[in-house]
Image 1 (cartoon, rainbow, N blue to C red):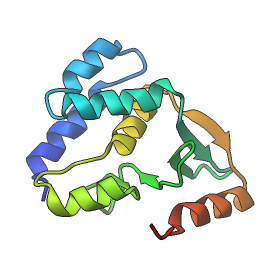
Image 2: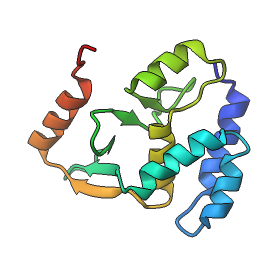
Image 3: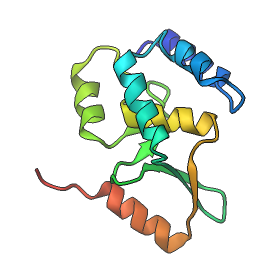
Image 4: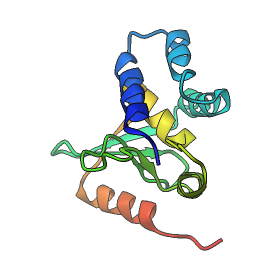
Length: 142
């Protein structure tokens, strides 16, 4: 279980990251909480331009990582214990087994990209949104 104090620190770090923030400064901030391996993995996703922000005509936003079917949720207002979520197996298994687990590379990449305006924006209509959600929530057996 992640402590509320740690979540406040993380929220402060993310709030300090803006489109004007130098990447070196962002990495320095992030490294106070996240491992270098996780930061590099997240930055690789961003460098490959894989973070997609799906925006509906009515302003609803869903995030995804291009080439995956993972559902990524940021800043969920009703989830005070852990406001970030991803449907990848690493997130789910680590959440259950790793003390103080906060986020996977997909959620970190998405959070950084959204704060720095580095997401690819994809206008999404009702049918495309339904298809996206169906794809994200379909469980593929191993």
